[in-house]
Length: 416
Image (cartoon, rainbow, N blue to C red; front, side):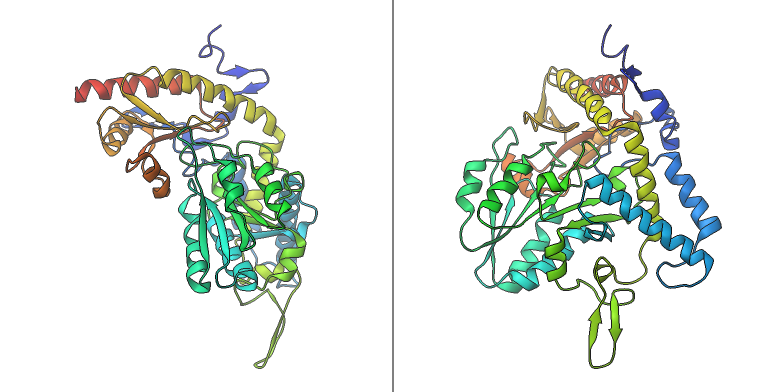
C-alpha cells in the first residue's frame, strides 16, 4: 500500500479525525480546498480552544489575583491550573518556574534585559548561532550595545547543521550566556540542545533555548535537557495568540530583577521604595492574558491526549515523503537537509522569484511563506535573499504534499 493511500490512518493516528477538530481547514480558497503549509508562522486552532475561549468570555470573565468575588476566584484558579499544565508539559521542577509572557519574543527580551542587567558587563560575550530567528539576535545586540559586550556566532554547514567544534572554540572566560534555537524555523534543523547545554555547563555558562519551532513537534523535558531557560509561543503550538512561556530555573529567576514594573508584581509600594512579590508574580506585571493562558492549557491537554510521540512519528513520515517528492523536481533547490529536522521544506524553484511562486501557490489554494522568515543572516550564508517555505503540522496529509509538487510543476510550465 502506498504512503498516499494509507495517509488517512497510520497506526492509531487518524488524520481525518484530527482535521475535523480544526474548523479553518474545512474551507476553499479561490475555489480550491485550503492546503495550509504556513504552520511555522502560526498554527491553526482546534475547536476545543475556540470553544473554551468563547465560554470564558461569555460566562467567567474576571480579572485574576485581584478580586474576592466568585468570578475572580474561579478565573484565578483556572489561570494557575494552566500554569501547572505547562509545568507538567515541560517537566519543570516547580510551577513557579513557569512565567506567562506574550510569546517567545517577549520571553527572550525578558531574559536579555533582566539577566543581562544583572550579570553582563563590559567586554563580556553572548553566544548565539548563525541560524537564529531575529527574536534571538536583536535582543542580545541591544544588550551588547547597552553594556559594551560582544556577540559571538556559531556557524553551520550547508546541510544546516551547527558546527559544534567551532562552538567549543567560542567559549571563554568572558562568555556569560549561550542562547540557541532548538529547531530552525527556516531549515527545520533540530539542534542537539542537550549536548550544547552540557558543553556550556562544563564551563559554568547558563543556556537559553528558543523552543518556538520544537515544542509542537516533540516532547520537551527541561530537567533532562538541563537548560536554564526555555521559551515558546502559544500560537505556534495550536494555542491562542498573545501567549507565551518563559521557563527558568528557580535559582536564576530568584536572582534576576523584574523585567517590567506595575500591578500584581509588587509586595508593597511607597513613593520611596517598592518591594517585589515572590515567583512567578515578580515577572508578570499588569493584567495577564488569562483567557489566552487558560486556552494554552487546554491545547496542551489536547496534544497530550493525542500523544506527542504519535505526532512526532506521523510528522516524520510526512517529512520523509516530502523530501522524496521535492528532491526529484528538476530545478528545485532545497535548503535544510540536516539529518535531524522537523517537517519544514524551504526551497527555490528555478530562477523564479519566491514571491511569484508563493502568489501562484496561493491561487491554487496552497498557503506557504515567502521571504527571509526573520532569519536574514541565515540566508546570507547561502547568498540568497530568501526562499519559499512549506511548513507542515500533524493535520497535514500526504495528498497535500502531492498537490504542492504538482502545483510547483505547473508553475514551472507557466514560466518556461
